[in-house]
Length: 118
Image 1 (cartoon, one colour):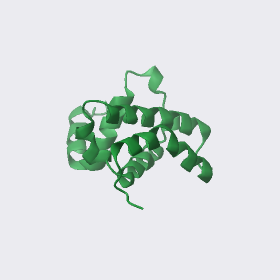
Image 2 (cartoon, rainbow, N blue to C red):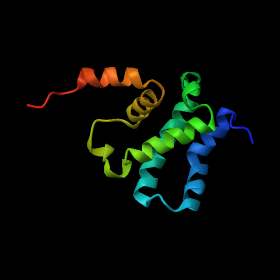
Image 3 (cartoon, rainbow, N blue to C red):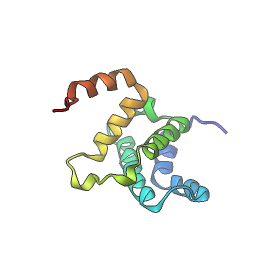
């Protein structure tokens, strides 16, 4: 089985097929599944949009998609409430992709906005 698939297959996986794969494992809580689904659906929308070609090098194969999903799960997204903040799902996706693919640049940006303790 090839890990390199066309972008429509990746979008289909992000919109619905990932839930079947995760439900077989049974290790992911339902709250996490709902919040993860919202983020993955937004990523699928990005891959449907005009800037899809810019995102394909970052999430253009199943290995990278799995890495992205695992990073979101490690972030403990079930403990967040994105609806109560001004933080957008697209911003979260961009930051996660930046962190996964360009960690040095991510750290420099984070350090620019780091607040020193009082």
